[in-house]
Image (cartoon, rainbow over all chains, first blue to last red; front, top):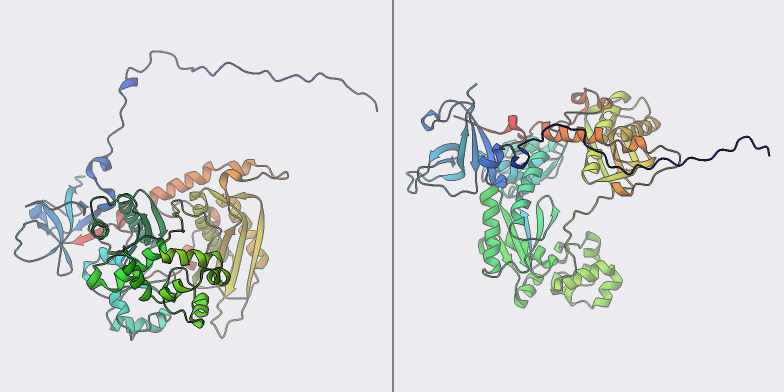
Length: 121
Length: 424
């Protein structure tokens, strides 16, 4: 066997210095004041598992300040309050009603309306 | 004590929540290709003169005449409603085992200090109904098998139990055992029921009177566990983590018969994308890809052909694109022109956890490692809806092979443009 070449294997240079941030300049004065941006879901929905969305098609509810294409947030877990808006079921149909402890006709409460989302543009 | 909570005619109930016009009316839910009925509510089951389990095309007319409303299955809705129920159940016990889409076991040890089990069961039932609109039954007993039994009783004797039944004394246990046929005990299959009937075991009570060594010999350790559970000794553990699946597959009939391989290929790719997504969601990889293809067995005029092939992957993966490539190769190997195909199916098996995937000397690991693309696709699809971003292999002709879902209700809870709409 002929010896062709004889080389010393070089060991790779070990890097022990940590990466240094390239950022220079004045550090952000907000660093210790950062908070999360407001998330509407968090504020408008208290109980996700009991919350449903319902869209209104038509102008029949303007008396309740609910208009065509509005979206209602319905929380089923809440207890209705006197005069509060509820989504009710009467004779197999959905109806929006103001809750009263002594209703003139019996109905089933499907859920409590907590917010009305109305698009303006 | 252990509670078994299960939803009453779950699929039909999910549909009814959003359709008050159908409350107390017969409702059925159809299988994936609207071929047969897979779920019927109490009112539909009460119409015993209707053969509910015949193919739908045969009974469609009778269903209509009897005022039965049919829904195509809407698994998106059922899955979301199921998750809501599970979340609510978790507020009643720190240990919940999700047994199926509509059944969960709750460990009640240490959670009922101030109320009776019956009251707690009622509270569970009432809360689930109030929050979701879904009716449930609750069985409470010292073991899982007895809890199942209690749940059966709760549902059978609704007027006495009001959907909640507790086995909390020796008398009640014996009474429950005596009133339950052995074939209705959880875990007793048709075969065992037959064999047990042959030796004079008709009720669950008879079964508990058998000597344990006989049970062990005839029905192995599974039977022994059942025997103990029925005696009131818990020996089936809680499984809080879902069992990793051994294989994941899907196969659906085409909307119409297909001859051309290019459409079959697109359907096959679509199914692969579906199962690969499941694989990724449980953080595992598949080793084998099986593809099968067949014509319509029931047709008297069509030439018949069916075949199946399994291919082994060089390295287990959950990457949709690699799996599609393999599945297409496999499909080409079994496809024969000149037949009218009814169904293509795929099944992934040899499932291993993602972190234990072994490399292969002859394959570079890199392309397998690039999970970022599929992860991005998963994120987009979970945000914008199923199959919004797909592999090009799936094509754009889904309507030409997709199965028919004529009667599917809206995805009321997961799609903004499909939420419940009320006309005023």
